[in-house]
Image 1 (cartoon, rainbow, N blue to C red):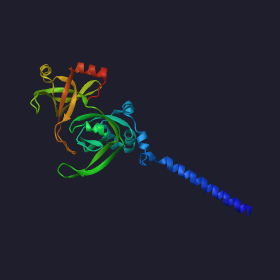
Image 2 (image 1 turned 90 degrees about the vertical axis):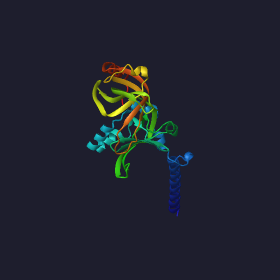
Image 3 (image 1 turned 180 degrees about the horizontal axis):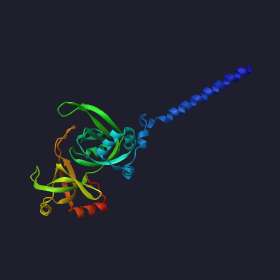
Image 4 (image 1 turned 180 degrees about the vertical axis):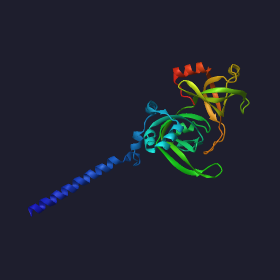
Length: 270
């Protein structure tokens, strides 16, 4: 009888301890002060300064080649890592904007509402963010044909500024849609402190003041900074882009002066 009583007391004590332990585990897994939502993801988010300290420039052509070669290795190199890039604002939603980057690729940038309110469609903005996922989504193109595109989701992202730097070669002089004198130019790619390529298919209307324009000649290389906008209607699958650069500052003329400036300042070029 004593042994039976002891066994009953032991079992009751064990059940009591298990019940207390279970209650404690439930309380710590959910933050009830925020409507019961799990705040683990929010606490893991990096600040803008932390992202900038670790971010590298996002090259979409390199990303595409990496996933084509080895998806597992590419995911390790891109998913969860921070990148800086220039995006054009093609669509603004409640908590993100989208950039139709061509080649059936969309960058979806999630930012705060305060930052999103400062954006305008078609303008360029420099952003830094962490790539959360890269997914395929189905939809239609501009004429209703079905297609799939790649969506790069940057869930934790920040808008930096709207100033871009670019090297161009002067093609001709003309007027923009507002009748203002502009320099019409092609962008130039600079690698390892050398001019390596000219994009002859894309035209930039660069709004410089008349006095500065008078100092330029056709085929001059120029380095400028300003606010960039894409002037055409962009489609997800294809588009012929044209751009306007406003609030422009002329930084340098000629390859030697431009390369020297880039060496000293290490600016990011479009």
